[in-house]
Each structure stands twice: as C-alpha cells, then as structure tokens.
Image (cartoon, rainbow, N blue to C red; front, side, top):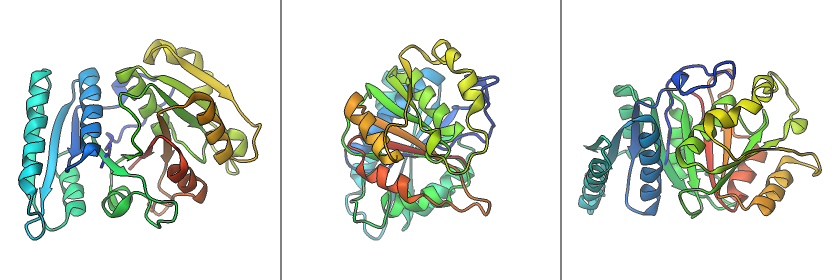
Length: 284
C-alpha cells in the first residue's frame, strides 16, 4: 500500500516552493511483496530530497499472521537501508486484528506530515478501487492521502502524465507530482483537460499564469500539452499514454461538502484501465 499524508497547509502558485508543503515525517505502511519495496524506494527518494524522517510501519495480526516475522525482517531491512544512505528510518510494528484501522490510528496519533501506501490494481469488474485496506484508508483518513495503485511499472519512473482538470486533479495532486519530479527527475507531461470540466471553480488560473516558472523550481523536462481532439477524458489519457508511454499517471480528488469521498466513474475507469501505475491524491 502507498499513502501520502500531507501537512494541512494550503499551497498556492503565488509562492510555489517547498516551504509551504511539509515533508518532515512520513509514515510508510509495509507488508510482504514487491509493492512495499517500490513504495519504500519512493519514500527514500523523497526523504533524500526533503530530509524526511521515515517510519517503516507494519501490523502483526495475532489471529492470522503466522509469518509475521517476515514483516519484522522487512522493516528491519528498511532501517538498515536508510542508515546506509544517511537517512533516518524508524522501524515500528504493532499488534492488531485490523491493519486498516491501525494505519489510521498511527497516522493520527503521531503528527505525520504524510503517509505512503501502495495497493495492487483492481480488476475492471471489481467493485473495490484499491482493495479492502486501501479503500478504507483512502475514505477514512482525516489528513491528505496519496494512494499508489501499482501495475508493475519500473521505478524510478521516467515520465509522468499530469492532468490539469478539476474533474481529475487538484492543486495538491499537481504539487505532489511536481515534488516527486524534483526528487526523481522524471519528464512531466502536463495535459490541459479543462475543456471537459462540467463544473468549474478556480480553473487552475494561478498554475497556468506561473507555468513558465515551474522548470526553474522543479527541474527541466516539464511539457505542456493542449488537448481536445478526443471525445472524453478517458480517450485523452489513453491517447497521451500511447504517445508518451509514461510510467505513472497522477490524479487528485477532494472530499465533498460532507467530507465524504466520491470517486467519479470516469476516474475509476481511468485508474483501472491505465497501463502504468496510478497515484491518486486526496487532501484531508
């Protein structure tokens, strides 16, 4: 699983620098399998760029987790790797019969700035978007979350598709994509999909006004693509993937007025069908 819990600080393009987005403490839930390896590598790259303290976190299910020692070995190895790189990694294990509840409790108890968590991609026929644990954390977290839905793309990512659309993204998701770009130096393809937005509020005006400055702040290879040749956002995204063969797509969503999360059907379809990894960011 991969979750990013972000510090609850507003960011605007009037002052788009790292000072308004805290990366001091990261919670990284880990379990057996390659997903944990990828998410921990992302955490290390972010920590190397922003001097983050990482907590490598796992849960021992006392009733069912017969091989829990493998999880202990996993976070112990995470500590060793972090130490070898000069980064602070704190291994932590808790006992509980609910992994998903334990992640939420841990994230709220110790003032983490963000959580990284990764899940496998769900089948197009599945009702779950990220699986039992991922859906619960994404829905119930009271702080911003970025969820990695992995489909086996190689890491470090070489390029990313970043939609500019109030239907598919938020200022938080675009900012996260830019900070990740700064950390691992991928090529960023920013797609203007605003013509498909049925409900428009800010329209990303500040972002567009400041677009020429982004390369100075977050590094070169940031491209702007004007779209509108297709009939919907799904077709636009897939067309962009065929052109760029990007490793990751970064989306964003905001809670509704009641605080509940509703992922639009168009976004669900894109998350499940996109050939590469998908990161979806939710502000708390």
